[in-house]
Image 1 (cartoon, rainbow, N blue to C red):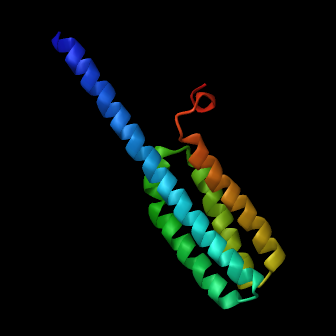
Image 2: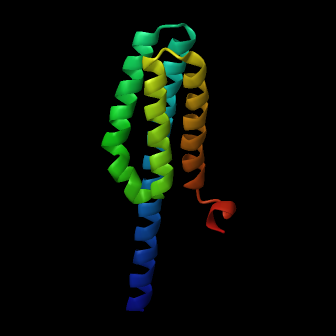
Length: 126
């Protein structure tokens, strides 16, 4: 009977860890998508300096959180998002709105993809 209790407690611990990890990743991706969309609005209004400031803050925050996110996700996905955010910053510096917006769409798709991949759905398990 003791083994059943131990097994159930391990399953419960795994479920708790999975839900915390899912919540963390979901919150972080929502936060980064919101920041990117704010920078998008600034770029569309041709407020390049303010958009650049938001991009630099987003890039710094991404790299500050990347190590923790990297322990939870596949390394390549984290790198791809970091590269997209870096490109967005470079395009904002050059005031190239079209290339910035194209890279912004890519970054938001990548962030949404990692968020969706963390939910306990059948297609994510198989």
